[in-house]
Amino acid sequence: MKLWSSEKEISSIAADFSGLRILYLTDRNDAPFRYRCVHACEQLRESGAISNIKHVDSANLLDEIPCYSLVVLFRLEWSSRIEEIIRTAAGAGIPVAFDIDDVIFNPVIEAQMPFLKHFPESSLKGYRSQFSNLRKTLLACDFCIVSTETIAAFAASEGIPALIHPNLLSRTYIKLSKLIYPLHSMLQHKPCIGYMSGSNTHDGDLGSIAAPLIHVLKERNDLFLLICGHIGGLPSSLKSFSKRILHIPYQDYRVYPWLMARCRALLAPIEIVNDFSNAKSALKVFEAGVFGVPVVATPTDEYRKAIEHGRTGFLASDSGEWADAIFKLSDSETSLKLGAAARRTALKKYSPDAFHDVLAEKLVKRSVSARGKTPRLESFENKSSVISSMERSAKMIGASMLMAIHPPWKPSFPKSGNGPFSRNSEPDETVSKFTNLIEAAEHRGNRLYLDGRLFGVILADCNKPLSMDCCSGVESDGISGKPGFMYRAINNDPWFQIEPFTSIHENHHYLIIKMIADVAGGHSFAQFFWTSRSENKFSEKNSLRFEILADGTAHVYLIDLLGDDDVLFLNTSESPVFRFDPMDRPGYCGIDLMAFIVRFP
Image (tube, rainbow, N blue to C red; front, side):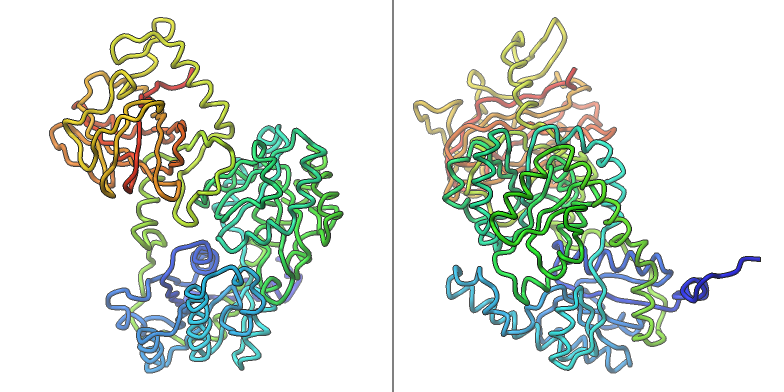
């Protein structure tokens, strides 16, 4: 007979959360949505509870509320709809909670947000309205669920009791880490440090460590800086190192692990330490840590808890400490040693297993017994057309690659939107290999051969420009000195249909495009469609969308057309038909090369 060694074990065995039914309501699908809604629901389901996520404007929502024992409003601003939801829940005797992982429900926090001083008055009005409306929702709820002690203190100052449940690692990242972590030493063979930005409000954070970065880059001329995500502009003092700074646009969350694993360290600077920054969770630390990447961070409350200085990462308060920490972690051996310790800490302190049943135990005390019909468990996916499109792309092709970005630093990347998925750890080298092979290949009509074997099929190049006979929204515009045949896009949806092909090879693996584009803002999106000859109807489902640099210079994009097993368009015996939309706004474009390439030897 087993003897239970603690009350906690006895409680966990005896607990039955099958009667707990939690409904999360939101109007967003971003990273906070994943951490606070998707991850929370996954944890609740693992405890045996029923937990679903719905959009706040879902049809029949008011009729479904009585089927739950608790309604959670995630970061929802006050509106007539929220008032209606709370009234419906109150009428059914169901408590309502407000969930948030920030302190922007308190107007006094405006003075502690340094980036706001750079915003126009119109944006400030939007923030102030958000502060006020979030506070109204908070005050109308029975209690709140927050991610840090600082946020809980602010809620308490408003007279609202708070339950603290931290942001945690996702099961997805833990599974990915089992694949990526063993490859970490190989992926970081080139010394690289990284900075990941989730929004356009962090330019000041990066600027605050410009001086130590300059010092380290001067001392180590082999060190690279990878910037990924939204950033308005590179600090002017760093621009002299632009050849060693690579900026990649905001990525799907499943891509970030591969980018992080390329780095010997990630940087998490905070421009000013105050209540606003102390309210932030330590996501950047433990999400990097699970992949074996140590972090250098400003010592905010949560970063102090997450980093064991000198063992799992470094805390840095001034330029000297930042430079010293970056120097140490630019060494591969030191990085791997601290990264291994960071991974152990991340799994021990921030995994769902470390908090098994914790959220359910907290919420069951605040819930009531549901009286309505038991809700069916619903998928967390397809919460918006954007997410739906991303998921379809991921399912069909696994990952696509934006392979070349030259010059390395381009401040004109968009501040929002989803970039392409990336699977390759050496984009520049891979593109160089393919372009060299294409130049060396023997041309036989539109086919390319290497050593007598089929290597690729050319869709378009300088000798065979995209046809003007089947296109829309474009007109020819020959511009001397530019590669390829130039076109002018006269509306927001220019496209070319490419003639049916009879020479598609079953092993075609990549689509390579060398193109020039020039639009206002310096960035755009291109999209490649395919369909069967008989259907001849293009749809978003059968398409691949990727981001391009539209800065008036030529760039090469290498797109992986295969998932793990499936080919995108070769599931028909008919000759496929293709369409290419080179940009999504008016401007100029030129296609120097578009070709299918077989699987790399």
